[in-house]
Image (cartoon, rainbow, N blue to C red):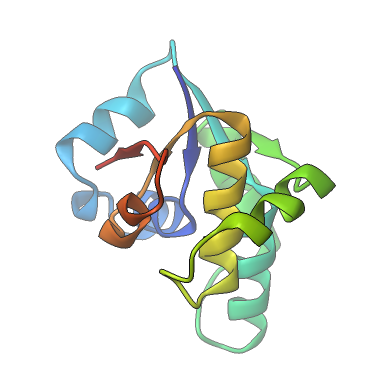
Length: 126
């Protein structure tokens, strides 16, 4: 199964794995799953780290990607155009981009954010 990790899931996995649900943990640990991290999440982490809201460095993120065997999913024009169709359930532009990617790629998203389920067609794992 191919899954997209929400930014919070990467942060939890690194800083507080006990905050992950049992189902999310099983999905992340299953070697048969293709785990992807959006370049949008990389941007979100970098922005929050530069503002002092998150104690992650580029090295920490690189190490997490390697340790969790993540593929980095680029954000494409197709993903951006999908955002025109999304209702305004979220104001957070990073979340909206992740939702657009998950819908375009037809993959489940691993997230604790229940609002993601408001978007028709979104498959949420938590």
